[in-house]
Amino acid sequence: MKSDLVKTIFAYQISADRRLWDEVIMPLEESLFYVDTGYSWGSLQRECAHVIDAMHGYMQRLHSSKQIGKAFAVDNPDRAQVRERWDAVETDWKSYITRFDDREFDRRVETIYRDTLIAVPVWQLVFQVFNHNTLHRAEMLQIVAALAQPVDFDASFARYCIRNAE
Image 1 (tube, rainbow, N blue to C red):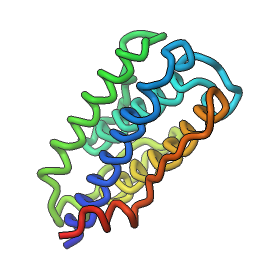
Image 2 (spheres, rainbow, N blue to C red):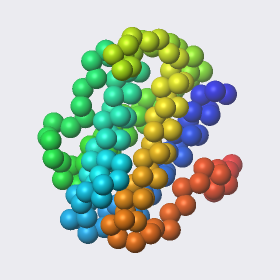
Image 3 (cartoon, rainbow, N blue to C red):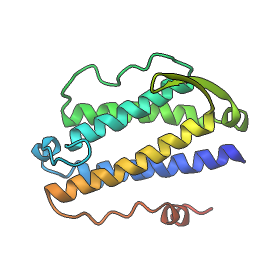
Image 4 (cartoon, rainbow, N blue to C red):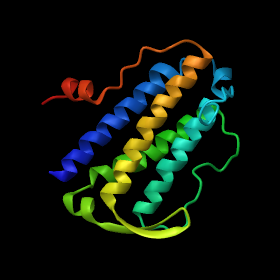
């Protein structure tokens, strides 16, 4: 039952992230992807790179890695590189979530958080990823609104559930 909750929320996250990329980010003129708006991480490029780094880092934590590496091998990735890396990290998460079960939900992992070694249940790390992505989807929409025009983008979890009810 607990694993079904995680799988549902993760499917929602993937859906909302895909829609954001396909309906909002990719249709923008490419030059706007790099404009620093002064909000949050500044540009869509840096905002997206931050989300990717976080998702990559949390995946490493789930596998008990104490050293968290960056997701990018380049310092200033272009939009195609960002999208490619986003897709790769998302694929890693899909693979992990597919195998997710109730035992994994309660498993404890040791990780370093702000220079402190802590032991936490997996569900806390997984829910942090959901929460983090939700925050940054909203920030990306705000950046797009500052760059171009407000976007009509409904990423409501309730509407996702209604559309996907079995």
